[in-house]
Image 1 (tube, rainbow, N blue to C red):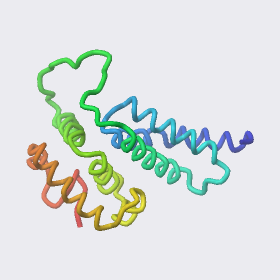
Image 2: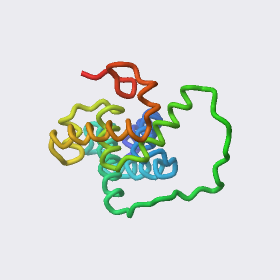
Image 3: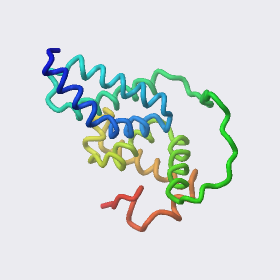
Length: 176
């Protein structure tokens, strides 16, 4: 990579890292360290192919989706997450927005990795079903049925989300 390419890559990383980090955080089920690793891996792969990449952001996102799916397939199910200190048992947060984030994060963790990926790609990333199917390497029908089952599971594991939902929306986005 020459100096001009390196400068363009650094500018891209500076400009897009916050949005890409949010995506990585959602894909990893709220694990900050895993999200940082996922983003770093995707950026390293992008840097290696920088000259041939047509759309840098699309390429990084694709690498992140595929890398996370690969990690899901390789990893055994983990029932606990190691943390430096045990979480405090604090009183309820007065901010409804913070409460909603916590509820959504916990609910997403109760989904399977595939269910979580479909919901993140479909509703948080707002990708059409065909693109979700292409990214995950499955059929559009599989995306539809997985999304349907995932939303039903969310309603079961987090009924409080239904009370916060506006009619005709999913995660604050209008449904068709």
